[in-house]
Length: 254
Image 1: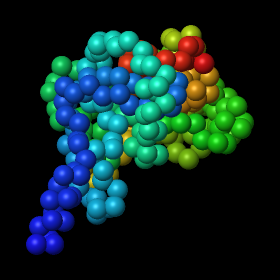
Image 2: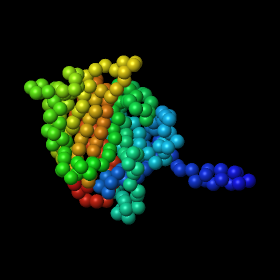
Image 3: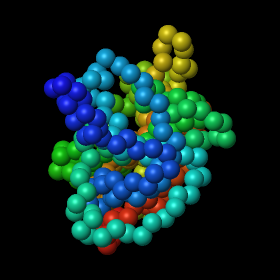
Image 4: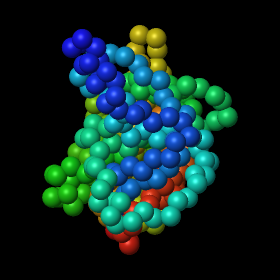
């Protein structure tokens, strides 16, 4: 009898896992509160730490969308609603994926992107050190020059790039964003092909924006074939965040 009662108790308290088509309101911080209709859900790839860390009901994953997706725009929420929303878990902050093609493929939460045409996007807060040093994307790029080879500068796809000291096929690049209030994008590029025995993320993009949405760190990753589409990816990310944002605060980009 006791066992049956416990089972019933746990069942009634089971957390709701959001589904495709549902409208959610998720707070990243007081300046960035997204209200959005969820896109296709991703498939979970189990690992040995599932019992400790896998909490799908608490993930802020918006879905996978075409690069040109135009979301429904909602009116700003009230201040009271904003204050009642919880902040996200540190390891379950805002996430979404972009599809650069018309191909249909399943998104997952595995370690690597699921397809050559996929861009994985993750939004986090700036670290305390970044805030203390007033770092932005371009300042971070200048700091990283000590890791670049001398006289290795070159221009590619509108980016300023350097060869890294660690290996000839590793590059660090900086590009200006088309959005006026964003300081740019840093790319870490590994210009090597993935193999069956050695798979890795070929391009990582980072934007450190202390003056945008109260200070956020935009992370994205994709395949080497999309190196020339970095600015299209960057513009889509900021466009979507602007469209989804329903914070009641004025000057929410500041």
